Structure formats: structure tokens, C-alpha cells
Image 1 (cartoon, rainbow, N blue to C red):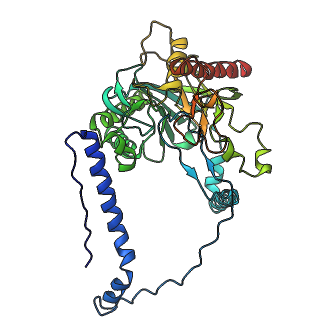
Image 2: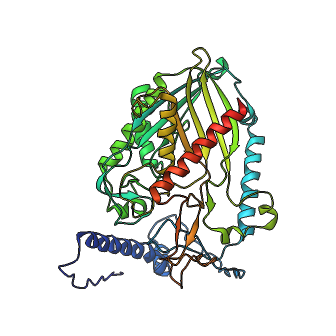
Image 3: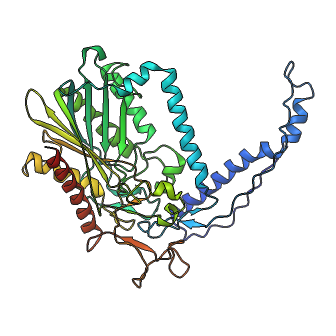
Length: 453
């Protein structure tokens, strides 16, 4: 028998409620870790009990042969540039081996190749295209804002970053794309770009349940509904449903969860109800000077041959889908994919906002629908979707120390401390930087479409 003893020191009366909750959460995690570790610690005694006739007909487990841990190769210790997370220490990347990532990529490619060889129909479908005019597309937009005051934000994991008002309302922008080829039997996909930090699984589960309650069990499923967050760090939190993502908002917040679920559902329903014959045109352009790599020292650990394959250490490609009605001739909407974090607004900002992509979506829709049309009320829907944003930052001036000197390249520190290393965007302040990065994405879309028109 094993007993876990926790000793609680006296708690001062002056401690805040948030500190109390954090203490409770920390204790809960310690208890969980202790409970998980007990079976490992008591493996010998557990084995003894199981091999003495406790369960008839069950052979005892054979002990695993001892293994010698591999000796890691020495390498340079690298920190991420996390300039936009002002007060949060950066994570240390230790023991990285680029060979491991290359081997994993080769394995994934081999698996994909094997699956396609084993499934000829899948291979045929992947390469198939309905062709111009053989789609039916609908678009819709709905509000997902949730609470805006005295509520923790999702993204920076800073408990003190709480909502103090509203800069812009958050929206879900949905597109339902139906393969109009008669042989496809109406197969479709629903894509949603939502002004939230992430497209959480629990949110998607609830959305699918509502869609299946309205349209039946087969039309919209987990296989054909895609929900993607723009990754703004200025949206209400508490809707992930897991300890890891909800701990800094001090738990699950049903009001924010309901706003996200209902808004995404309503956007998809609007898109479903507005499908019409349409063409989808693909164009690829560039958005230069719109982002930087926030971990350049880590990027330099990639193999030289791999780095030589790319002109920049971030992806500058802007992929645009232009959707037009083939019978009405009207512009239905636009979807673009570009890699940049939603962190033009840093963790001191306390107004709910869609950050640079939310700004770009509102302004592009205003451009197409007219300035007198309220957000979400126009026929044209513009989704500035997220892409491979990994270490891609909008703070294009890079990280600097308080005296204006560059931060240490490998450790992102100023005088040995991370707190003073702060990255900033191209504007005079963070809101101006949000506007500039948003406008640059808008202009990249317009230039791309103009070049292919």
C-alpha cells in the first residue's frame, strides 16, 4: 500500500483568488503525476501479486529486456524567438536532431505512397478534378464573439491578459463546396475559417452534432467538415475542454464555447442554403515582408541542402481561391491561405480582436460589399485562412532589447534575461502593426488575382 502525503503551507489572507486557483490546479497536477507514477514504482510488487494465482488462466507478463539509452549527439542549445510573448519565458529546444525529422518525413511519404498503392480508388480520387463549372458553392458568415470583458484570452497563456472590451467582433466564415459531377453523388466539403485561436476538437464535435441533427447523419461528418482557427491571440479562451489549454483561463467557459459552436453552425447553414453553380479559380502569389522567422537559430540547424531548396526561411506563398457563380456571374467569395501568426497584438492587449487576419477579412469584405454593408450582412465572404504558421511571426522588425540593441541570437535574451527581448511589427504601435500586416495580406490577394485575371 502506498500513501501520498501532501503538505499545505499556511495561505496568506492577502493571496488573490486567481493564485488560489493556480495553487489548486498545481496540486491537482501533482496528484495526477503521482498517481501515474505509482504503477511504475510498484511494478515488482504488482507482478508478484498477479503471478500468485490471482487471475486464473492468465499468464504473467514477461519483463522487458533492459535497454541502453542512446547517447544524444552534442548540439547547440537553441531558444525560440518569442518576442510577441512579452512576459513569458521561452521554451528550450534541447537534443534536436535534424536527421530524426528527415527520417520521419521520409516515413510519412512512404506510408502515403503505400496507402495509395493499396487503394487505387483513393489514388484516383486524389488526382481527380471536377473541372471548371462543375462545382456548387455557398458561403456564409456568422458571429462567434462570446464574452469580451473580464475573461481570459487564449493564445499567450498569460492569466493577466483579460478582456477589457471589443476592438472588432469575431466571425466564422464558411464555404460549402459540392462536387457537381453526377458521378460524385453530391459529395461535399465544408471549410470554416474562424476568428479564434484554434479550431478545438470539442467545438467541432458539438458543431457536427448540430449539423447532423438538422441535415441527417451522412451529409456533414467529421470527414468532410474542416474548422480552422486564424490563430488570433486576442480571442476569448476557455473553450478547449482540456486542462492544458483552459488552465490559464481558470477552467472551461460555457458562454464562449456556445458562442463558437452556434456561430460556426450558423455560418455552415448559411453556406449550405446558398449553394449555386460556381467555378473555383486557383492562383498563387507572394506576400513579401509580411512575416519573419521567430526562430532563425533553430532554422539554421536544418540540413543545408534542405534550406537551399527555399529562397526564404519562412513561406511567402499566398494561395488564393476565387469563387464565382457560373450562372449569376457574381463573386461568391475568396479563400486565401498565408502563413503568419495572429500576434500583431501582444499579451498586454486587452480588447477582443481577430488580429491581422480578422482585420484583413473585414476590410476585404467591405471592399467587395460596400462600406455601408454591416459585417456578415454582405453576399461576398472573404476568408483569410491560416497556413503553415509554425515559427512565422508578423513582428517584422524582429526582437530587440530595451536599449534598442538586438537580442542574443541563440538565446533570445537581453543580459541573460528573456523578459526584455521583445519583437515588434512594422507600425508605430501594435494596433498600427495589426493594420499594416492585414493590409499587406489584402494587397497580396488583390495583386495575385489581378495577375491571373
